[in-house]
Image (tube, rainbow, N blue to C red; front, top):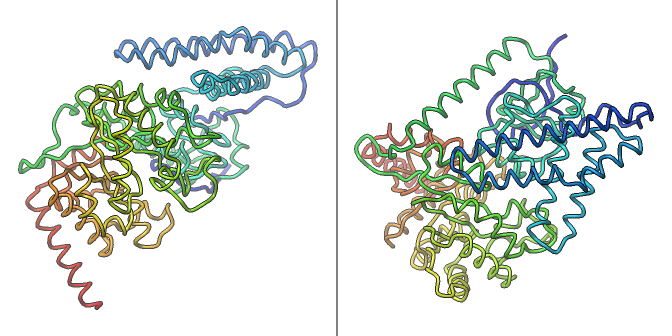
Length: 539
């Protein structure tokens, strides 16, 4: 039969081929006959046991690498799988006539709902982990184990599934979802090709069916031609070789051919991204997104929940900087408790001062003894930074004060960069939003928009000059930092740090090594001169 292409939207670039694992796919939704229930009960128990062995193996591997806290998190999953209450619920569902996979999923959902209602925030946060456990055990029950080389097919993915995506799957495709969803952001960072918004036809794919996921074109190919499969595998091999090369050179600094030092950091929202970035040589975290785990929260996250999220990531830092961004809620990242207004970023936090105090306290508690920087999102005036600094001073309680920086990602902020720089300890250029707002593009087009457009470039250059005049460091944490052409110009203009997706850390470090700084500086100056001439001609 001929190839059949399903059109979606590319959420993470790359092309992969593999056997499909359809998350949540059951043999049948029909009730099973009484004579079959004993067999299904045995299959459900065996699936839970298989999941336990899989988790125990992962925990041992993490311990071998010295990642003991991560191992403890995985071992918590083992305890969940052995919970007598969960086992009893599975047995009850089978007795009622549900199949093994349906019973596992339903029982996990019930256990998760009970956890979510608890007053203990640590236990309540495990609810999504239990749901993910149920889905994985259900996959075991239908003989579809998520393993290296598989392609994950699902309606959507929640935060608890993202770790599985990063650790096991080669690629993923979602019937629903968007390119700014949590799973998509992490997939891009980990280098896992993903297509989203394919539609319900995606779920017609069978477990074990070979498919190609083309994150570049936004396609999922059923019955792919052998030549297409071979090409996908070849791309995967090249990508893996590049990753191995990056890991082998992770201890080498990113220095241009003529001796100019550039710091390369990693953007992260999860433990998996931080680990991957460090494995490829990241010298720290340039942007730790704090809002993504809480997009489904019903209220501002508590001190305990935030500390639990931050501490395992920050504990991994040894002689590295961690830049923790305050909640950037609003726009396409609006949780239910925020509402539907236009307020975003720091303005939203300043309207909820207790939430700001709680987050600053959580950062200080989780990052005790670490080289911390706090990044304030969507700053438009120096007064925003002053307000945060005052609250930070109130919650320090004798602890060292972290550096406080402003994210320059609006035309207003770039125009007022000189005043902001006098208040800030560092600046960070968010080129995605800046490009979007200056050029009037939607968020997704802004990812690939021409950051070197005259209107954008002049604001970037003015911001860099403001940081230099104030003698404070400036980094870039937008997509432009990992675009080879834009990166060279940014380095030539004098940015000190580049913070990029985990999967691109090694690549960007290599680009820096191949760059001649003197040449990059001359070319950047010439580009600015041309931009000035073009602006004068328009006047």
